[in-house]
Length: 248
Image 1 (cartoon, rainbow, N blue to C red):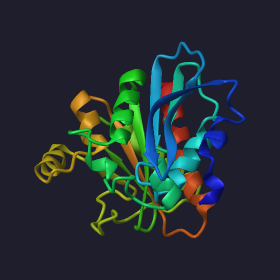
Image 2 (cartoon, rainbow, N blue to C red):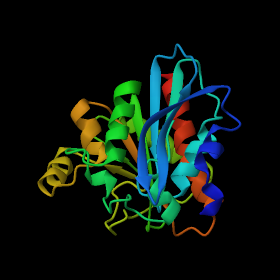
Image 3 (cartoon, rainbow, N blue to C red):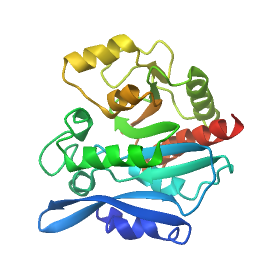
Image 4 (cartoon, one colour):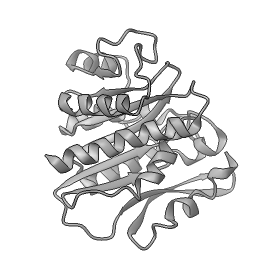
């Protein structure tokens, strides 16, 4: 984990001349201040915007590293990429799912009690994204992507096709051990959204759904021994979304 810090240096170089780095908030922990940073192009006339949020759960590392690499991914002029990562820097430093207060940030998108959830909300309000990508990892075998009600199924199909083309395994089951009707893909319909609300699970997906913004959640397998493969899986998802929005 020590190779990830100081993460401000890692994320700003060598892209600092091409990016604006906006500090959305600071988390104070262990006598240190941990900035929550949004990386955006210095100037753009793009009509379509992608917001990548990575590292909400600090022990899910591949998303934050993939988000870093994505900053140098070429994009069509019609598409702009914004990155908020790591969204839970204290959790990342300590290998924890939770933030400095022991909260699961991805359950705080109704009350917004945590600094991190409020920072993500601020990023959404600033960027007004066409789509949000939330990068995660789980214990399942293979990768799968989760779409919300407004996520185009054609986009999910393009992602799984791109993953298969790179010979990455698609999950047959989700991270709870339940079979996926379509390998590598899960659609979160209205029933699941309501059920999560009844259970008090107010995730980033519930928040973006309330705004009518499509969201794709990745669940890369942390069971894979190769960190590079896990990172590349996440990169394929980002690159495919950039390509598909550019063609649209």
